Image 1 (cartoon, rainbow, N blue to C red):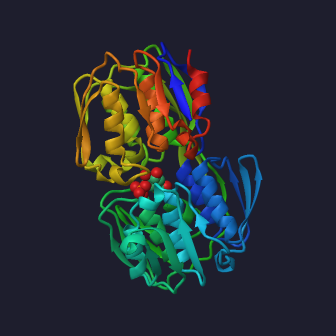
Image 2 (image 1 turned 120 degrees about the vertical axis):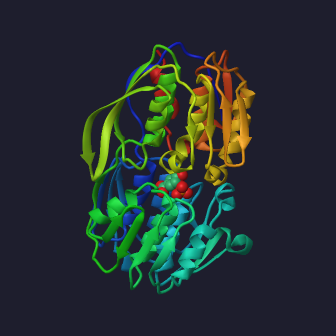
Image 3 (image 1 turned 180 degrees about the vertical axis):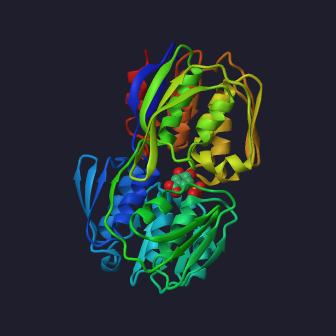
Amino acid sequence: MQQRINPVKALSGDIEVSADKSISHRSAMFAALAQSESRIKNYLLAEDTLSTCRCMEQLGVKIVRDNNNFIINSPGIEGLMEPAAVLDCGNSGTSMRLMSGLLAGRSFNSILSGDESLSNRPMRRIIEPLTSMGAHIWGRENNSKPPLAIQGSKLRGGKFNMSVASAQVKSALLLAGLQADNPTVIIEPHRSRDHSERMLQDMGAELRIEDNQITLIPGKSLSVCDWSVPGDISSAAFFLVAATIVPDSELRIRQVGINPTRTGIIQALTKMGANIKIENNTIIAGEPVADLIIKSAQLKGITVNKEMIPEMIDEIPVLAVAMAMSQGESVVQGANELRVKETDRIQAISTELRKMGVDITELEDGFVVQGNPEGLKAAQVFSYGDHRIAMSLAVAALVADKTTEILSSEAVNISFPEFWGIMESIIA
Ligand code: S3P
């Protein structure tokens, strides 16, 4: 599919974005840990999170759907069944990595596969620590890539000093640690998103958290979940940037999750001069939630370094668009992880923004942008099949001089199927 986007004069509206992808994945997997009926409101109906649901169903979990409200009936972790077929994680790294931690400790075998993008993503980061817990996992290319074959085994805890801050790896270790016979200690170099910790504690798991160190003591029985998924700040980020760089814009985005491990994009944009207000703060199912109100503003360049990356890892492509429209130079460094996302996001966003006239230079671990608030040049650009690249380019297209064409625009369905409709609705 290709999407044509015209430049716009202003954006205005009162919108809700799609439900949080990370919390949705976890709610479907964690509900399966408890033997009973769990309720999830506002589950994200997108390709990635539906892949997780299909995998859980293959393990014997029953999911009754009423639109985006789910009732999940699980036989409990001990009652999960050996899947009769390969578990297809599609494009979703979160499904594959978290599920590996869950399956490593079961008493059956399973195989996890994915699409072309996922089949090339690094898995040694979960295979190695899980193996040291007693797991038996094999992968392609000398145990580094999917598909993964898992022989369920008895697990033991351990101490893990993680070299990369990754919520997916951390969560895989927590899911394995729940099944181990002694404690698991995880030390992160920087804090990554902590939804797993919050949700598992909510279910009764024993977790001790001190700075960047998490200790999981297994053995507690986990109770049912009743969660409501807030709006995804990673999806809201596209509209935060859009309403900032399109002149004369004003937007309210309702009920967005503002967990402090995810709000790096708000901090970075604010530091650049964006006008973002946070109102109606509440707590929903243990997660802070608020409305975000954005008005257009002239931005100035910023340097984003390694410590700031984990809190905005998925928002860097759209931050590059904001940087392109800023006064002066911006730098992103210490973001090597972007090279192993759904596509190499450093290369993808640099190449495509360059086609739109942006002065952007790739670094090994980031990029340098010479901003130009005058606007961008229309071009034919490519999403690389990556949802966040597609949506970032759509935001860039709003401030181009003519019509921009985005190839493989259907990639948005991975995390935000309503994206084009919402975009259309706010064009004043
Ligand atoms: C996610 C963690 C991040 C993020 C991904 C979702 C999660 O990945 O990029 O989109 O839900 O745990 P890493 O853990 O690999 O950084």
